[in-house]
Image (cartoon, rainbow, N blue to C red; front, side, top):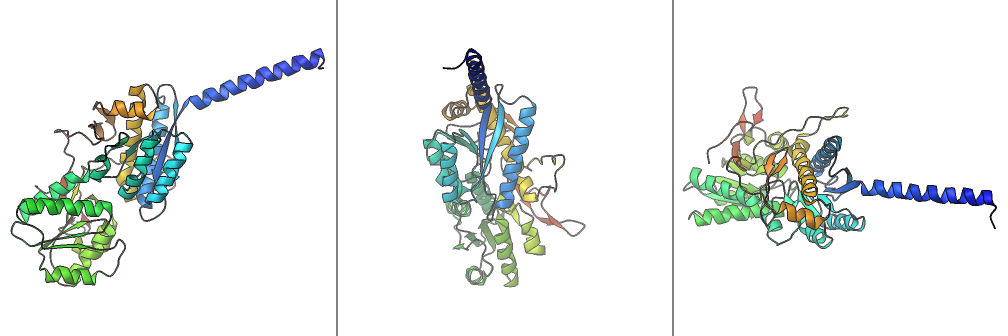
Length: 383
């Protein structure tokens, strides 16, 4: 039996332990965790770094302003490598760790596989990069995005081709990705609807360096303009190969060409290339003490990730809860969400509502500047 003094010490220790436990529980409850699923490795790592940096900056800024509902925001960052199976593994890990809110995934393949798992786990996700219309066409309750879906880009590109290249022989090439193939198919449907079907529908493998066989087929088809669904490095390879083969057909593409790798790889051949893209993305200021400036790829998506955090934060605030279902229900009401990109509002599928004051897709052309560079900034094309 404990002595009276030992009993007093024991009771004091038990009381202190209980108080510590309550304090720690309170601290845990005073956090709202947001997962980030991004390609921090692999071919899209430069974009993934932009997602991570944008989300980190948003959380830092919002916490300085008081967090959400008296709670601090905390990021849980995971590398999905832009690959479906790894993104699914990240989704399962977030579910196990009870992370109810997610920024990402960034790519269409990763998002397509992971989003149903998030829905099953009660997790709401805002992608800062996936434009695949099929993602919001599956009837999932939990999916939102900060970018317009690619059906609009494809429709605008198709209208441009019909209007500016009427009667010409149009070829279509894509890189076999969900993103590239989806765009190519939308453009193809637009051309057929206008009575001007493409004369060639071809593919290339992402990262392929020798496209001479493909170019030979396009040359035999006597293409006069080419639409490319894919990313900048492959577009540059294709364009240079076309010029080397004596094919002067201009290239039309998407925001996948919004990358320094395009003019660097294509050189002067890049001049005249038209692309569909959202209005100029806002560039986030470089954080103080940054070791190196963000790359152009990171800058292109950092503001989207920043806005995704803002959407989730205001969803939590509006719902009065960090529960995924409650947050999604609030966002589906279509109320304007104030973000760094402007006011965003969502429809029942999780797509952005059209705002007549804010066009979501522009046409811009790469041109040579007086100092010899190839740039697109400010070079808007009439649809």
